[in-house]
Length: 226
Image 1 (cartoon, rainbow, N blue to C red):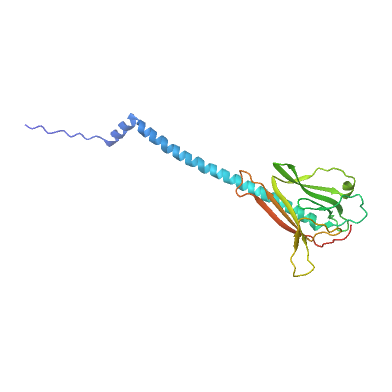
Image 2: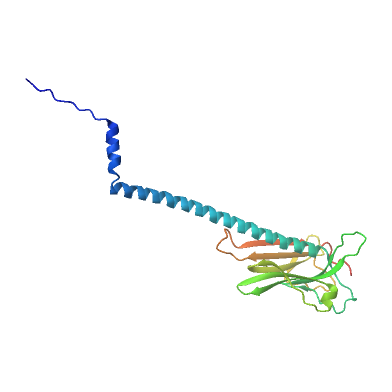
């Protein structure tokens, strides 16, 4: 009499449970560790790149705002520039040089009926050689006559270049403007003043150097005596 073979059917769930209970092999652990390290490295590089880009953008915006402040100050001072008469004999002289400005300007009063104040304003490049500063100093004409020292206002730091040119307006309409590094016409103000400012680069910036080139127009070559 033949014996029939017995068929044994195992539950697939039991196989899975047996494999899980036996744990992971060393190769599987190393493979999972490598995959996790690659994913973590890519995520950290992505986050680090976003942080650097945000920092560079913030620095760029800050520098552009500071350049705008310099432009606004120069425009306001030069638009109200005046020539002094002989009443202020001990007042300091004006300077229209290649890398320095010193002139008199009127700070208009809020009240239309009131007379504005006369100020002596200077723009100079000073500071340490590795970190030069663009300074603005404003004094009342009485303080300038008494040679009272006042604390200058730092407008820009890390300035690589600060240069100025002055336009001599030609008499002929067809002639070109004559640009020079100095203004030597006594008793008269330049009609055009070109200011070039260049900032030095830093590791946290995107595109350097930052430059500003602005031409300021003084309403009249001779604004009259004060």
